[in-house]
Amino acid sequence: MSMRGQFITFEGTEGVGKSTQLANASRTLEELGVDYIVTREPGGTPMAEAIRELLLAPRDEPVNEITELLLMFAARAQHLHTRILPAINAGQWVLCDRFTDATFAYQGGGRGVPKERIALLENLVQGEVRPDHVILLDAPVATGMARARDRGELDRFEQEDLEFFQRIRDVYRERAIAQPSRYQVVNAARSLEEVSGAVSGLLSEWVTQSAVR
Ligand code: TMP
Image (cartoon, rainbow, N blue to C red; front, top):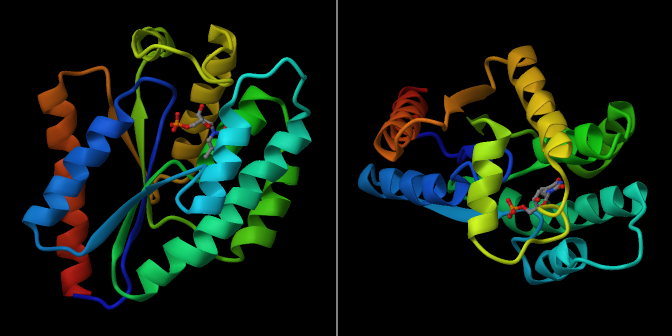
């Protein structure tokens, strides 16, 4: 087994089943005897979780898109440097619920921030660090939004309209097409068994690859 752990992120629009698939991926790694942690963005450390609360709370004051962007990256800097990188360097695999692809999709596609500006912050905060693999759970936006609504109270992002989430899905899909070696698009509109089978299959493949490297 290689010394460096793999950095795997889970992305998608609201209600596509990310939490369920993170739990499924964790079980798969456990069965394969891989040491791993599960974390999320925005969040993942006490300070970054405090920034998450600031970001998700519905509020009357309009939130400037650059304020939102900088807070996402402020949380990410803390999370990446104090939790994710130490884990990877210690040989642990990191399963992360969202990362910078979400910023390109939500702040870029959703809010309209030019992607060059996001890329500047990506380089500042991450240097060369990028996820080894991105699992994009992809499903029609309306399906996921209905699921998110059923969960109860909506956060500041979930209160946006269908078009906002359609733009987000479009950016995710464009990024996946542009970087096929890093992205795996999983059709999340299928049955739970099929989606879980696809995700577990990818994890098993990556564990095998890292063992022979
Ligand atoms: P979650 O609901 O998947 O936990 O994510 C929290 C919300 O934050 C979700 O609506 C997506 C949003 N988000 C961004 O807008 N930009 C980002 O960079 C990240 C990581 C999340």
